[in-house]
Image 1 (spheres, helix red, strand yellow):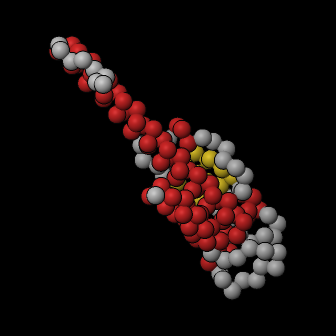
Image 2 (image 1 turned 90 degrees about the horizontal axis):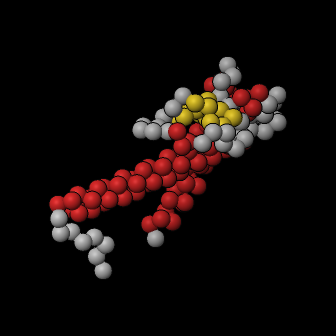
Amino acid sequence: MAKWVVKTAAQYQRAIKELQENIERRIRSMYFESVQEFYDFCVQALKYSVENAPRDTGDLRGTAYLEINGSVCAIGADAALNSPQAVVGTVHARIVFPMHYALIQHEHWEFNHPNGGQAFYLEIGVAQAAKEFAQRLSAFRG
């Protein structure tokens, strides 16, 4: 059964307006869901990177953070602190290890880390999260 009975120009305009609003609502929903997925991926990448970072005093792991569009969203291996709902338009994310020695620890595979952790901790953390999310997204294909 038809949802609209269109016999007049006014009825046509109402039907078109309702269709446009429905389409826009679905697009906003899809955008939010994709931003949420991306946000979840970034938080997971931060967690894995922190877990892989060398452990000595804990400063390197404890000061790492996720920044989305200039706002800090998560710190260390903690769960997300801020919701990505405020994100509109292009999303820029970065995982930051702000300690002055972070790059040196990241790049030198020959360093010994007796308390745990490894070189390339950020790259490995992102790769771990990417693998996990690739499996998650492949479930949508059916």
